[in-house]
Amino acid sequence: MQIHFTNEIENLKTNLIKMASLVDEQVEKAIVSLETGNVDLCKGIKAKDLEIDAYDNLIQTQCENILALFQPVAADLRFIISTMMINNQLERCGDIAVNIAQRVKKTKEYNSLVVESQISEMGKQARQMLKLAIDSFIYGDSQLAENVIKNDEIVDNLNKQAFHFLVSKMQSNPTLIEPAAHLIVLTRHIERLADHATNIAEDLVFYVEAKIISHKKKLQKLSNKGEEDN
Amino acid sequence: MIEQDLISKVVSLEDYSQKKFDTIIKVENLFAYFGELKALDNISLSIPKNSVTAIIGPSGCGKSTFLRCLNKMHQEIGGTTEGKIYYNGIDIENIDPVILRRNIGMVFQKPNPFPTMSIINNVVAGLKYNGVRDKKLLNEIAEICLKKVGLWEEVKDNLNRSGASLSGGQQQRLCIARTLTVNPEVILMDEPTSALDPIATTKIEDLIYELKKDYTIIIVTHNMQQAARVSDYTAFFYMGRLIEFSDTKKIFTNPSNKQTEEYISGRFG
Image (cartoon, rainbow over all chains, first blue to last red; front, side, top):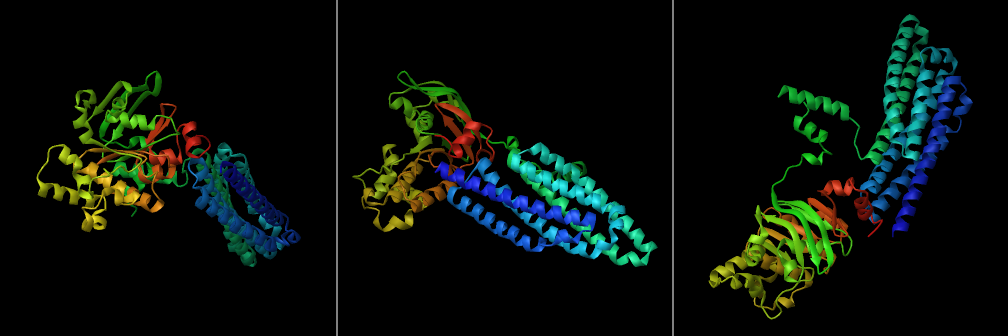
């Protein structure tokens, strides 16, 4: 029974790693095409996303089967729960890669704006966060995951800067309104990408350290405030 | 407006150390022997009142011996002990075994109704043994206890039938009803469902859940999922030692000890 269970877990982990690699490739293509304006790189991203969706269903079914048949506990249970959550995050990252690729086709003429607004830098950072979050899962490295979580602030700040930069561009030059609007939507996609990477890292910390760290700071702040008010 | 209660609950979600309970049985440095053989090795723990405590561990780890020490049954079968056990703060060495067992009842692995007695006489056997003769009172108590274990509706029309004619699950509930008649505070259960089918097991588990409002239950079980389902606290024993005792949620989600983790996840034992 134990061998059977271990094989099921290994098989699940292998599928999640395959899916993560696929998502990483898709996101890399989308971000590089954004940086370079090379829309050829975007070809095939949408079609490939179906493969990610298939992994999503496969992993969900595997998790359901393991829960029903083996009733795992402790670290095994946390592994299944975090796998289900990471699976969900990865599937959304795959969708974001498609969204970025579609948007790049509309902004390819405005590469200088992409660089000046620091969207290319923001894309690099978000992509690196996702890559490291995936690595943290593969190696079960919660320290690496915590570094990923810290980096979310960098992307958030770049997002704010890009927004202000693009708004000022639109105000000063109305011909840039359309491309700048597309780029603002792009920053939103990239910012979400970083959020998903953060979530993956938090899920990994839950698996390795049995701690729920998402929302913790905000809730602790509110809790402390409540105690002060009382 | 966010509920402050909810926030505090979430913030302290994983902090099991803050959980407070009233102790009904306190065990201090308990050793138990069968001749030269040491069955329990320096056990210390406090059993929380009005809750279910599960004792888990591989065969031969001392679970049942521990249970039997709590109502001095271990000595009854030729064993010896060292250390202290306090029931409601009183050293059990100073309590008469009959009185102690009236307060700390026991249910065994195999249902053991008295085979020659009717259902009703099985239920009130303990009361009769303790000198109660009033038939009306005996019948009233029998009905209350049979209702408590969910058996009344099934047997009320055949109370004079032999106790042994009931199914295994019904017999076990009959034995629990018999334990309840003398109004114990603590019920010890030694693998009470290991001889039962899943439906009868569910009925006993539901009963345990109901009974903990009024009683303290200590259950020895080999079934890990049963321990997870029915208990509030879990103690893991291994080779006569208490390896870990904690909130059941903690034991089954994030045990502190590696041996506990390996045992509950089926990697040894």
